Image (cartoon, rainbow, N blue to C red):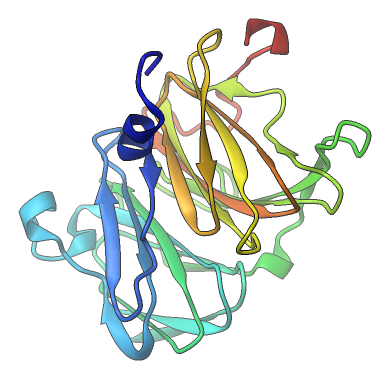
Length: 260
């Protein structure tokens, strides 16, 4: 990473072109074997693909669990035929073994799946029903609200954790100071950015960090050895998702700015 060109970093860690009209797109990473994907149904209904050649199964959730967040306007998800309405930034946890269909002309569904050995119930996670945690300060340009949808408490999952962080108007920084969690991979999807705005996403090991320039609805994979922090050119939000050896939400090591 320390000697990679910007194009190499984008090839290895940036997930773009997730939201293609009329398609379900996805990327498989060996970092905790996550699948990161997007569905843009338009006028159609789109089934969650098995991607049998990659996952070796005939149904995507045969051995996986799934987190979904709608990053656009209202739509719905069918789970084994049951309809779940999702508005902007509403989430849905889907347990192992289910069949999933995405629908909604104005919806854009982001999803992350992780291997699972236990089946837990499908649960709706309304953005307005989650009590946010206030983090950061206006003085430090880091004021934000953390919405924990699945984080090792309250909602039971096998290993998947996900939620949304919303940056306040006038602030730019997320996850500052940064941290590491060496037993879990984390993925950030940046959303609610204007067309001309960007986030400078910092990654790498402390003392040797690099950055990616990320636009709306692009994601960055942060392996367990990498920090993950960013600064935007305007207010924005991001969806975070984690999976790995340990699903204790507080299992992290803060990294002081001097270490960077």
